[in-house]
Length: 296
Image 1 (spheres, helix red, strand yellow):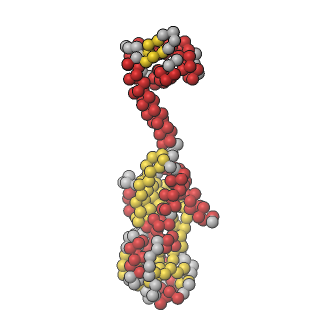
Image 2 (tube, one colour):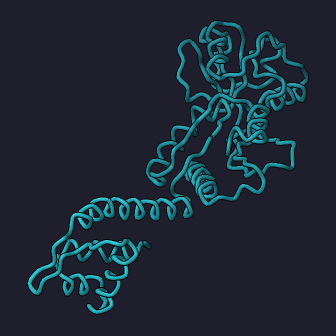
Image 3 (tube, one colour):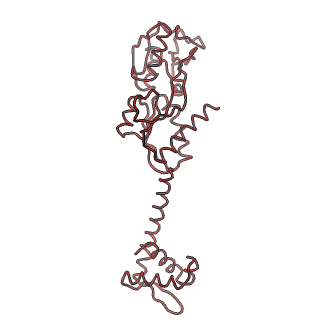
């Protein structure tokens, strides 16, 4: 029994009339009657009791109508789902975010994905450092990640979507809080709270301090931006973080701009060769979000 026979049968069963069913199906009545006879022969049973005045379902016909409707509906749903997956509007993506992007970009991505790709289910892991995100991509634990370059592997595609200047986060009672803009030289005597040394932000911050003539005295490291800012609030030291990280609200800290602030790149990365329509659409969504922010 093929799906065409089933659709023809359902049309006749619902209309209880071969002529009206044929008109609805846009075919002539004799071929429709022939298709129904072929179906009955294939199944080895009568599906209709025909008279000159009416068409009635047999008991077998009632059963086929009940289950056949479900089969056709499921098939239509399947066809629609396959088209949506093939068109990149439905599916599941595992997405990782670097620490600072967890607070700034991630909420926007979730909101826009819900509006523009309603069939997409996101499984998100935030507060990750670039080395962790790269490993997770290469080990197939993530499909795509928003991270801080450099990415030192040719196995990943990387698209830079923006740059963030570093800012200074100070305890609220710091002697430097009175300044609106600080230079790196003013931080030479301070203790530093930092991301781990393999973080792209930490590398940029340490290199900037060296160029300013000193090596930062790092007294505490924290992988998560929330923990890093909490250490600053507790008076452990100052921190250099991307400006987007300061969207995370915390008491007892102040944020100051840096003169000639070094910048860190933000990028989206995925495995080379992973070119599903869903992934392409999601990457485009992230790129467009950051482009709008830059233009505004």
